[in-house]
Image 1 (cartoon, rainbow, N blue to C red):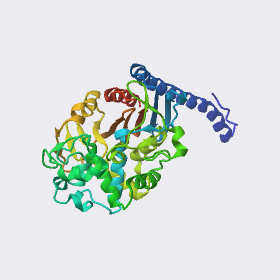
Image 2 (image 1 turned 135 degrees about the horizontal axis):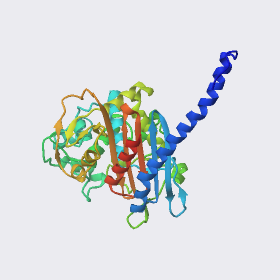
Image 3 (image 1 turned 90 degrees about the horizontal axis):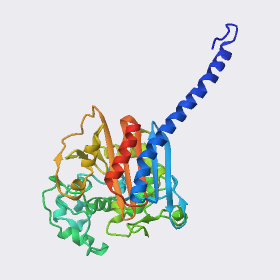
Length: 386
């Protein structure tokens, strides 16, 4: 549009602004519609194929958040899923356990180079005491199993570790293990002179800005706690188990988990001690196949092919002992890194992935177990659109 010279600069600017704002709004609407279409295309087929009652997706792009909610949190009450619905995170909890451990290290309460016997004298001289706390957090203690044997109770936990016999020296192989990182969580509570759940829920969560994350769901939040559903579509929730709280016990919402992702993408916004704790969980320690094992998070050079992401999250990697190559130093990061973690309980599924350099991340939470590869394919497709 031609603006007469006699008009003031202020009026000219106003006229130009009026013409530009609708264009910017339309562009934003177009981007939002494209993202909605991409998420729908990734999620709706999964819900249909695996009969998933409810699913929440949260996306962050350059610090902006979008929520996409599907289905119901309770089939019996027909409660719709929202970004405030609580889901069982399963092993995604390990990323928070690792952050509490590194936070305790920043505070000078423990060192990842320490050994279990320093905090649990009853383990001094045992095989597990040959492993470091870092070995426990990276599943490289020497062959601890995925789960405790069925006959082990809370009262027998210490005795189990006293009698445990390794398959390999610490740092030689990586075998994914709830007892391994569970023991790290337990020791972290001891080092902080606190009950683990109190240290996490009353200490770390508030510092991360998490307001809807719990190890013990209070009565006032129970209405937001989704029911999980098993293969027979019966409602279930997680049963207590030995070190379950320390290994896979967090319940959280997509709103809180995307805040946690944003804290990992831009930790400089946090208190210095928490920032240093998060940065410590981004260090890669062991190369295992296509994946680099850190504390809690698993890493890949980005962009990463779907094939490599699936290989790094395969049952061979999660269910078997794999050779682990110790990295002598953190890579100089000439490129971007994708961090990810899968999780599940008997009635819930989760997957989180983010790329700090690109300032993008995705959280997926569902109230039914369905295979990890389907979760990874869906989130990978969404990330490709970002």
